[in-house]
Image (cartoon, rainbow, N blue to C red; front, top):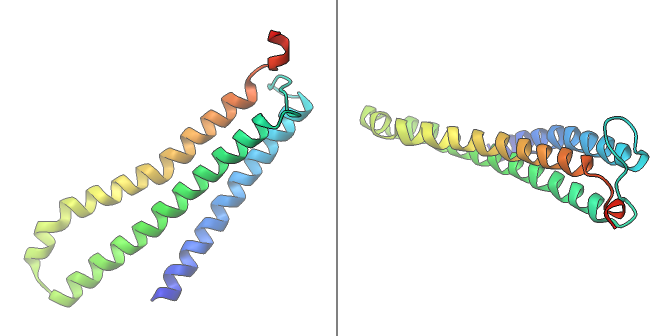
Length: 132
């Protein structure tokens, strides 16, 4: 069972990390080139690139953490019901179980979405050298 959970977690993490890396590399290259809808930013200072990379890592971590916790939560719930075969357990714990699952989905999708918005806004900022 642990092998299946580890494989599912790793596969989901690789897919998400690939999507996030593609988005950040495109954003960084657009910032560096000053092309498209993005203005020229100070990539040489490293602040923009470091911030974009950090935001990518936070989104990836949130996705992996929520997916892993969701798998563990649901496996434990199924094992508890199968082991006890008690209907009262299902009646008592359905609401907290559902709330935990919805919270994990909101965290796993919301944090990367907010990170993407911040990365897009950060990449769209004008160069700070123009303000001097």
